[in-house]
Amino acid sequence: VQASELPMVATDGTRAAVAVDGDIYLYVKNASNQWLLDATIASGASQRLTDLEIESNRLYACWDDQIRVFEKQSGLWQEMISKQAPSTIKELHASTDDMIIVTETAIWAYSYPFAADGDFVHVFGTGEGLQAAIDGDTLVVAEAAGYVYGFYNTLLPGQVFIYERSGSSWIQSQTLVALDTRPDDYFGTDVSIDNGLILVGAPGHDNQGIDTGAAYVYRNMNSNWEASGKIYPRRALA
Image (tube, rainbow, N blue to C red; front, side, top):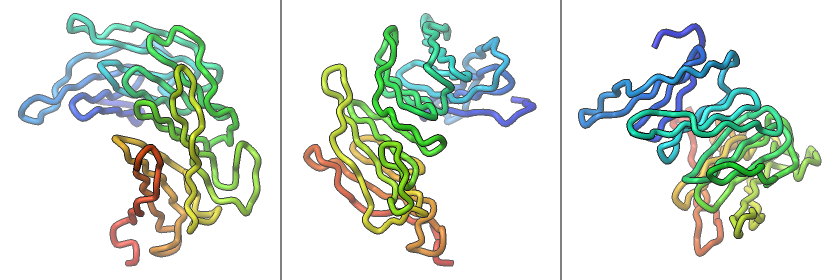
């Protein structure tokens, strides 16, 4: 793909979407591990995409405060849903039939077919520090270091909040903290969740050297998330 800007890429392991210059190119991996062009979607949008995701045979694309969902039907990718978010979208994450969007002030959750307005999940924003990830019935939310529910205290390290689905609502069930972190470790700068594991990034962590960083690992043990270890960059002590 020839481009005048850096492309945005999303993949689920067997499919990849590459967005560049307003168009989205979809590739599939064949039995020989080669990526072949499957389809091209002309967005018709003048703005650059803010996020892109592939999940459950759906392609999610965001432009500013617009969400467009494409599905593959009868061998063709077609736009099935178009929604307007409450404000500009920073990130979008999807898991099976759920979609969450992260803005600078809140996190909203939607369920397929995304017809209703989204539900507030976490309403206290901290600008660039607000992060989220979703897997099934569990939603992970992080605020920037020093913030708790939108209030700032320079002595507070970052915290990560766990929400679990209860019926049609998301209920906060647990707060993750790392006792060996400081505010300048930026615990919660990034979060991810998959198959009973949560990773929390702390790029300013100093255990293996100044600002070498670490990823904290939490494991779901009998419906309780427990610290399981840390991952350090390779050769962090060098």
